[in-house]
Amino acid sequence: SMRLLALPLILALTSWSPALSLKYEIDDATLNPLCTKNCYTLGSSDEGVTPIRVTVLTPNLLRFETATNTNDSFEDRPSLAFQNRDSDVAHTVKESGDTWQLTTSSVVVSITKSIGLKSVQVTSADTSSAFESWSYADGDAPDRLPGTIRTLDQTGPIPLDCSDPAYEQDPPQGESYHCTMGLFSKSGSAVVVDDVGTPLVDAGGFWSSEPSSDSEDFYLFTHGKDYKGALKDYRFVGGAMPLPPRPALG
Image (cartoon, rainbow, N blue to C red):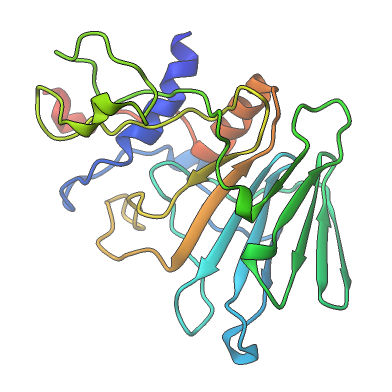
């Protein structure tokens, strides 16, 4: 449906590198990029461990970050794809020695603090879900469903699988296809949406020229085959459907 195509299109558009003076009209009424409740920092550079941060956004959606700087700070500015990170999801946290564990109604996250992000293990707490488990080494779902491209103008028939050889060449109108895969997988495996490199928005609503504070920043969708649930959660973190800048409309 058009609704299913619209959300991956947002992600496709965010890979475009715009002029820094161009303002991006986001939904200020729902903009809450700073996590104040459900985020946890593990490790510190003083301990010789690269710090990571885990944010619980919904029972099935989590954000994982690795800091790049020596002051252990993370990226709190909204990106064009993810604007809202302040949530109030019921969950529990337990620590036992070097093991840190977070549990929501849907998943259990386990991390070895001395290892960091590469030790992340996520298992399902919902026996009815098609999602079973995910680890950092698994990466993105191998059967992630196709998404969309920046434009279909003059392209003719084209697959929406970003690994297709058709995307090795630029489109007829130049620039790039900016192909982006969808938010779901065919089997229900976890989908990883990498947000590093996505343009960030400063306090004035303009694209920021400052790079991200994170070396790794990704969102893990563990919705299994609950595609409507994944769309609902993305609507929460992604904000209202963005509009083109008004000056572009004439």
